[in-house]
Image (cartoon, rainbow, N blue to C red; front, side, top):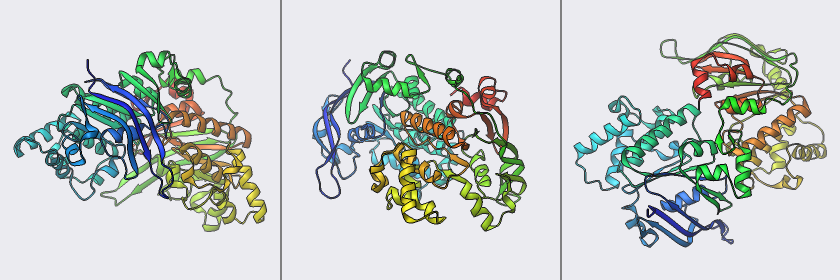
Length: 537
């Protein structure tokens, strides 16, 4: 069968701001997209996945340029079309689901206004009544039970999964032959991500649409795609039926991607419990005395009538030298719990002891002293590092704030920390924009270790990273824990990460702990339905 999309020798380059020689993002990329099927494009950050997606829908940034090649859609070389002429294709014949729904939806317009606008931009032949009926039906099809109420709401009133399903509805609204989904679940909790993928598959099946799924998640690709294209540094290194490629990878890069994924083995997706059993032979550290103790802690936001109980009678203990994981979806209360431990929120009731100190009872000087022994690594290394500072300034900032040693001693400590997180000392004068996502997170870890703390609060430390980079960062954290006798309080929505690194886990839902215990007990013998749902992903 003739492919719906044929890309031939596509080369894309980005011009630098200073006018210097352009950086090549795609180099002579060729691939076919079959009609009516799901094709996954996989690779690490910087491999060119998103550049390929944006080139096909002609949404490259201003400094991005297609310098060579062809993009054929239904037999036509669409690169010959002018921008205005191409808009007749985009939306009506080619849909697009972007990665970040916050950046893609207009915060000043209701959901209904934006969905109706999609029909106007695509010059839909449907009457206004037909448009309203299609919108209603499509919203019901992706899981919205009350479309009329949804249409009157603004994006900020919706959860991340709801916003992404609105974008899925928009992408499929014109019944396009092709939809490109660019990392559509990377910013979502695992259960919410499954809802979005089900919505995409349901729409694809109803309308016979071909889907290109851009992802760094090999397990997700294996479950949802029929064919796969593997990109490395802007080049296609392997392509074919996904079952064959994953079972018998020919290229070293594909083999490295599969080896770096804890959820893949022998070309198939492992369940979380099975993956845990394969790695359970590692020696767990013996538990020490409690570092963190929460007793009947509760926290409410808002008024008594309209407020939300974010944390509801939570008790937990974190032994020294271990990793304790708090797992739950967005809104479960896990971030509020971590902020209570850090002294950034005061509980309404209950006791909070960290390193033997009563946190709610501490004044400013006491909190400052405690925070020298307790540091945090945030979710996004793109947002948590000051882009204007060099690594010397970023890693040395806590040393400056606490006036540790002389200036020469602080500079020496920065270089020592770079060694500790396995980064070259020659990077000391680089800025965050010159580093990959994994390297930035290593810098964030180095900064957190600068004051030699005993406790690290890890807030989704790998959720923004590719699978292979995740594995390397988690391995680094495990090595550092052994070397420095660190205690970790890990906040995450991903039980697969927990099964890989944690000794103890508590599962949180709607502010309450629904299950807790040693990780092996919870992963291998879950008692709560919610825990079982998380494990089934």
